[in-house]
Length: 411
Image (cartoon, rainbow, N blue to C red; front, side):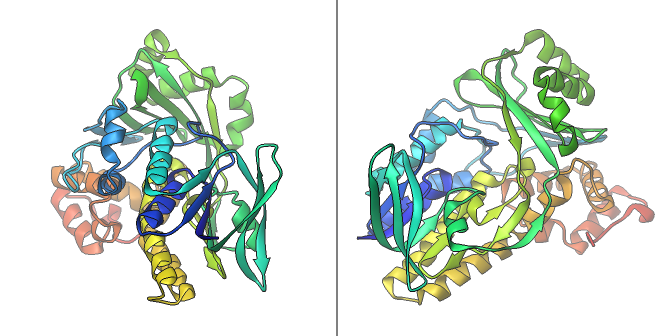
């Protein structure tokens, strides 16, 4: 009998399992894959996410993996350009974009070191449910026989298409359609730093350095162009980079070598899903999923895995009824993530609303607010502060934005 079973052992699952094991609980984590293994990802960890890794004693392992630090960010939205970096957060003055083969292995090893029992290559077939309460899981390791494990709570950390969510019938209560697709791969021969460039014609390319001296290069277009793009992704990548910034297009053509196959990302819709019930909870993309455009997936996984571990501890320790603790987890997650969700869904279709156009255009003309923009991106400045009408009024006055172009609220 376990205290906690976690289904899924990547960034959300290993994190919540490790944190609960460190509190003294008996934890089982299962995953259908083996580690190290790859998964589709932006790789990007904001300073706020790195702060969690630092607190957990794992940031040094990411740095020691050879993943290069990034200390300058380049963002552009058509003719708006924002270049710079945020102030340090908890002493962290860089961001990192590790390969998932590296990051997930560090987290799984951290969970094991904390005392988590990890079973890889394990497929969950059913949840054990009695009197409407989830009591455990049934599944099999590889081609082996069916096994059953029991626990006080089962946590689904198994992604947007979560088996746990499906088995308990967790409903989606807020959704926004996904707008685009992404193709990415890894290239040698280029050193572009961190680029996030959205061009005219609703297309974008991004690049950042990762492990093994490689750069991830990704492109994004609207979903309705996916079928044509996948017929010639090399040509499609070149076309988009050429269109957004010819200088980088020339370097891609003349110097870059694609080292691995492309990874397509045709993301599901953005959503919030009911994330708790009798004997179960959801974390990560299983409960709250958004477009990768703003790169907040990994950081939010760390943030809300930590939050869930604290609430589950309250329930298991008896300091608070489990149902009340889990309800508070969901409500707090929804409140804290609302700004990121709204920003992401508003700009991830590759065109700015008049509101965001006026905000970012004005910020690009002010060194002070450009710095604040990167503080927002890093997780050091809350969205409600950056986008407050009083803050924007000061910004617009500073840069003399015409009154007809001023938008103080998004609605």
